[in-house]
Length: 392
Ligand SMILES: Cc1cc2nc3c(=O)[nH]c(=O)nc-3n(C[C@H](O)[C@H](O)[C@H](O)COP(=O)(O)OP(=O)(O)OC[C@H]3O[C@@H](n4cnc5c(N)ncnc54)[C@H](O)[C@@H]3O)c2cc1C
Image (cartoon, rainbow, N blue to C red):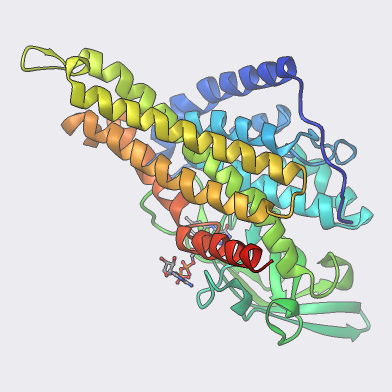
């Protein structure tokens, strides 16, 4: 059931120790393999299990569910650090955490007991199924149906529809599926937990993408998938609310991954401008280059402050938390992409080569401006909130 407690944050010493551990994980388990995983489209399940051992499978899942019980402001610091090692894997870990949080927050005792122990260790993985071929930004327009049935097998629902662009599709053990239990727009949407292997559940091919190649993106096809009534997550008609509250945190997490990827690229550029000589001097001697670096650092710092403030707003369940998360997502993902792209430019032709790793980060960060709500939809959310407040 939905929790209303405000999670305390870590002490500065605890936070520093945690960030050190995550940095070490990103440096040793992610960064050395990131380029290869991108090129071979390898989804590193063993590495994810190691992330689970570190407590990264349920970062803000409550401790009685096996989670780490951390606050959002701690989670965004963790995701930023992870993304320095590999934005694509860090981003998948954020989606997995969103699913675990949904089950922790809205699940029954039985659902929490069934899924959280293995989701938090990352032995099982989660996927979130909202988008459909005909409904992306307008998520309330989804058409996947959930028809009630009652027969000798008991009470249940039959789910039929297609979910598009599902991260972790084909790899996850549990799919949070948003489906329509009535025709009433957003109020007619209900969430269901669909385990892998349920008859009628199948997957499209792994999509060929610009970035995020180390994690699979597939269609999830529900062809008369029967689930028991106990598979409903939250109450009937609560699905849209669950989807949107989950996405508030999801947006912060993706924003944090943009910060991490872009900070990594900026750090590379800071090193490179000392190494590269043009016209008899290092790039670092040219004021235009220094100004570019200064702007990159400033934008990232501004974005980091917005992400941190929005995370605090979410921790404290402030009424404007959704708008703050949207602002942070819009700003940090735009800034992150710009900074990474500028770091590529500062590397000249070498930035365009795979072996330098910068072009991969640019490709990975591009999608952050599109998913978990496009940055245009972030403006819709922010604008609506502004106008409502002005009306009083
Ligand atoms: C790699 C990847 C992974 C993904 N993972 C998942 C996942 O795990 N689960 C999931 O459910 N979804 C996932 N998505 C889907 C993602 O959330 C959607 O792609 C996104 O919400 C946009 O929907 P759409 O692609 O249908 O674009 P559309 O909604 O068709 O939008 C097209 C364009 O129109 C703009 N637009 C739309 N409406 C408005 C408006 N009112 N005002 C101004 N502009 C507007 C959009 O901003 C966009 O630029 C993923 C997508 C990708 C690419």
